[in-house]
Image (cartoon, rainbow, N blue to C red; front, side, top):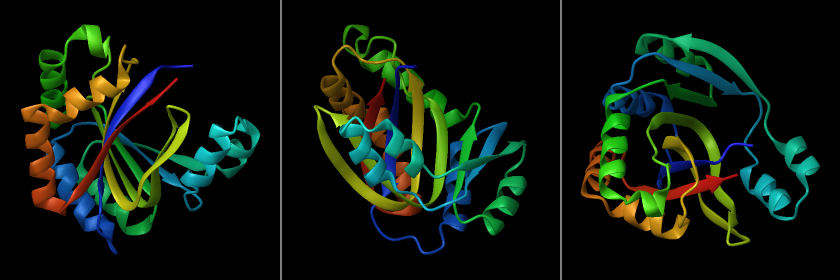
Length: 197
């Protein structure tokens, strides 16, 4: 099992048609080659998190919406075509300029003694109603929100001190600047960093 973390920003206001907004965000991220997947059923993230918190992996697996890998893309026009057809889509960049900014800010601004080798950098966008929930926050289930669109930055590793790492990352001036740039596109954003083992 991999140790991973994700910095997630999510729209706080309803986004009835998230597709056009998602395209503006993808353009902002300045990514190159990436992949797309679609979810074949509505998200049940809160119920999954409750099952995981209770140690019921079988129920969590049964509730997890199946997804279908749609392949690689090299242009945003390919993503735009998929967005027109798919109400629930997950788009992941292999690399992107904003992810590089994030990585550089975190590696320079948060001591390795706190973050270990964790740094969020691989950008993704999720379209369609879904829960942002953490079943592993000090054994409490934390529901951060339900949203129609979220933007994340994935990274491998587990901080030595997750709460302090989260606090320091979210306070970095460059991370605050990236969030402000995204909010100029999509309005107010909630935020969290989720870790999993």
